[in-house]
View 1: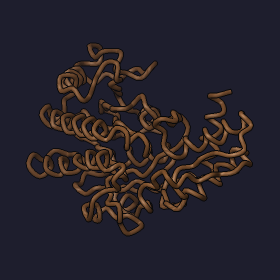
View 2 (view 1 turned 180 degrees about the horizontal axis):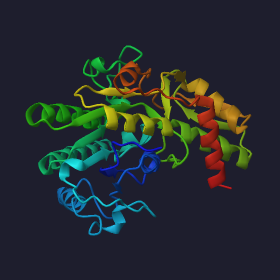
View 3 (view 1 turned 90 degrees about the vertical axis):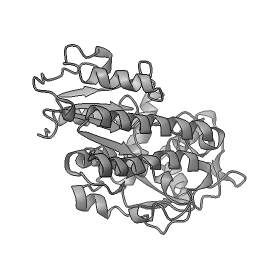
Length: 340
């Protein structure tokens, strides 16, 4: 699959070596992107202004002068003889993320790192004349009590759920910045609000993983060890919506290609499920037949999460296509393959 939007574009994908970014880079290659750059953490600390300036300086060099460590492995860029800064697109996926536990333990780091890397990157991108900036927010930016399904117009009607408010607010500032820079400078920055993502290559580290990989790992490890029960946080009553990672990449790329407006846009599947039902489904799909023990001393997090996804379909034709149970099977199978 190719798309003429990308054929003369150089694309910086922050977080391009991570979970979501790795799938997005693959789809960019399929769509025929002329050049793709991935600023990896070992070469660029995006919380550091000097590293951001160096990244943008290198991104404006001719292909033969651009550092090889910026490119996906094996990727051959197309020559861009008339390349200018307005042909540069930045898709900002990089973020410091984690589940409820990680957010409770590191609220200051989650706030500072996410705020500083996003704000400085967008500011410097405007300074050098970048053609388009795609900023990813988070469903954690929504108020704790929001009518379900969450509509983008409700984004400012209250304070986020306390356990992840520093992270959610830091990401929401990119919406404020994108709208302000569009208003004053005409800078083409858009803001997308993805719901919780899942899929192969997710983070399965028990200290920082989100609920789906955490439950998959717990169930499979319990089977290996012969344990008859697993502990699950909360009481199982909260609801969540999940978006398969490859669906998310398609939504981001469609927005990049077709959407040029100031309003935030939800990216979701439109399917809400309780944590209790999710845990039981994962137990069934992994073959775990033991008991689920609910630790009600641990926080539930936000009571309900489900997105209104009409705006994305109306503005750029995005609709999630992966059936949830099938996405879970693919995720479980990937994890099993990695840990044989």
